[in-house]
Image 1: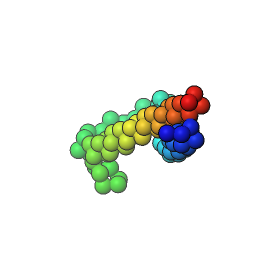
Image 2: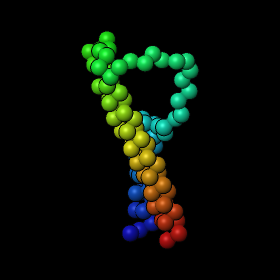
Image 3: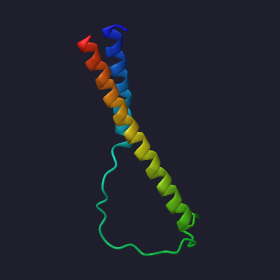
Image 4: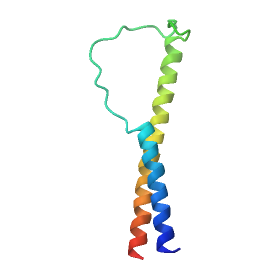
Length: 89
């Protein structure tokens, strides 16, 4: 592979990684203050879901964000690696 091709692959991987990071970001620590009310799992919420269903959807969304942000980081590192390889050829 030519250096130009490697550099182009690196740039494309970096662009995809940056877009994923822009959308999903890195997981941040929570800075919530105060105390929430403790509700039972079967308690219905105003949106029609139960507390257990709400918690399950929050866990799934958190898992998706973690996977996408880690994928973005891997893409950025791979893109950097391709660009470094292109300059050392």
